[in-house]
Amino acid sequence: MGRNKNLEDDKMWKSACFVVGKLSVGLILGLGLCGEVGAQAGLLKQHQLFSRMGGRYHYLGAWSTPVGDTNRDGWPDFAVLAWGDSGMKVNNYVTLRSGRDGSELWKVSWNSTTFPAAHLWRGLAGCGDVNGDGVPDLAVGIDISRTVRGGYGQGRVEFLSGKDGRVVATLKGPKPKEDFGSTLAVLHGPKGKVAALVVGSPAEIIQRTPIFLLGVVRVYALPSRKLLYTTKGTTDNSFYGEALAGLGDIDGDGYEDLVVGASERNRSFSQNGYVEVLSGRSGKRLFFIRGRGPWGSGFGTSVAGIGDVDGDSVPDLLVGAPDANILMPRHPDKHGVGYAWVLSMKNGTLIREHAGSIPYQYLGSGVAGIGDIDGDGVPDYAILTPRKIPAPAFGKILLYSGKTGKLIRYLASGDLHPKGVLFRVPLINIGDLDRDGQEDLWTSINHWMYNKDEGAYLVVSPRAKRLVRWSEEISLSMGGTQRFYLDAGRKHAGKFYWMLGSTKGVLPGLWLGKSFLPLNPDAYFLNLLTSPNALMPASLGLLDSKGKAALAWTLPRGLPPSLLGLRLDHAYLVLGLKPLRLELASNPVPFLFGK
Image 1 (cartoon, rainbow, N blue to C red):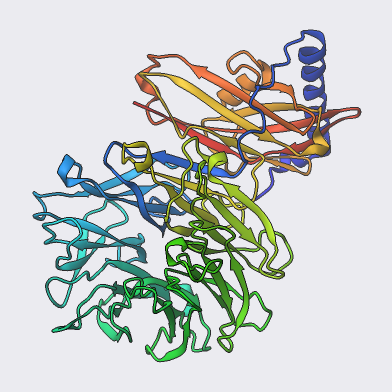
Image 2 (image 1 turned 180 degrees about the vertical axis):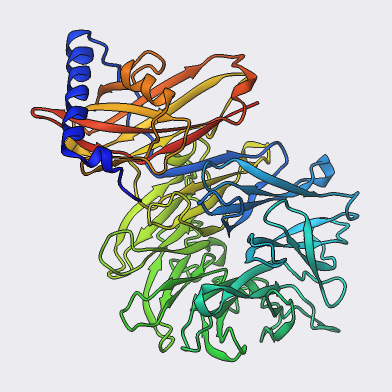
């Protein structure tokens, strides 16, 4: 980000300090307009970026994937899949969301008009530019002949334009009554470009008398969609291809390699699941690793490349086994403790294990790499433990040090969402949506426990944010309350905060001395600067003893329709008055005005 040379100038900076000082002393000390700090200050964890709840019977949050910058605004976007309930006349759909503000860019539905009894799998993957228009596209797996819930139809993969969601290409399954496209992943080639699409059919029948559900994985070149190779499971009911992920280049050929999970979850308690690591370029097996017993563990239910955690210059692997019963091996009905293995991809050996502590914790239901969040130069990783019985059944996202394996922190779903129950759901590295240099995480919350089946998803930052807001959108017709949660840290306890905003975006922003304020000055900015606590109550106030504050801005019903789609960005400054100085500028947060 280039600095504003005018504001870097010493004279201009001293003038800015003088103006801020006059306003601070006059407004705060003289006029007594300091806003009240909200009673809920600090109750919300400072990690939430986006949160969205589905409608009744939408099952929003079945899966998600990073897509890339489809609208060319400089922020990477992401797609979310929803399993509609056809019995309740709710369509399946995929929605593309803006990484800038979480708004919907487009939505594509599949219903009985498009395909009879169409149903979406959980196959969803950003697949690069397939149609050559310079915009990254999206692949989605579809069952086009499902007639009964729980059955398997003929699968296909449709490639949707990242620009508008229209179908630009199709891959048809090789035979009927198979789940081709149930899982999807992409592999990257030289220079980080998407080189291949991996298509999983974990319930594909190889032999029908007797029935063998080995599972099949097919790899297709992109953008040509030419079949490169096919690989199959090694045991009956292996569900080979249930989980797929790129690992990075472990064999040094310049192409990303592939891990395939096979949980063997339908083989009673005699098998424990396995993973295969394959050359992404040729399909050659590099490693075969089986989970440990004594009972069916579901090893391979979740897999993720996490980067090089052991310092051997080869990216490593994280595998979840959420069904493992490691506490009471003689009581298979008490399973679901779960564990996760960190594995070296130089030699396939175990680096460390993380294990659950109680039955039905299902640790390892989701796993993801998250980059280096603790600043030690080694990439870290996340493990999902969806629920805890007895109630309250709040799940956790556990963040571990890649270097030591120690817990850095955890994000409890109850702190991130008022109905925060995570139950056997995915955990996905969604990319750096807020452009802070830290990869973010996507997960979902199942609301079927509240008898509405709406579902919801969360996007969270593993790194705590100085500022978060509660709502992505405020209705013009209904109005509403926008809540901001500030956390400047204990060293700023008792100091003044000053909330500012802009309708003109966050870049290039302003450099105020050595602090970067990610807001572009406009009339709204000047209103909050010169008239604090007028338009937005408590926009100027004091941080509490922990350096936190919460403020609520209630907007009335019937706001002007001309505001529809307007985005407001906000950030705050922390001011010290003895002597007068600007001590901190927060990250920005956006919200929109909707209907």
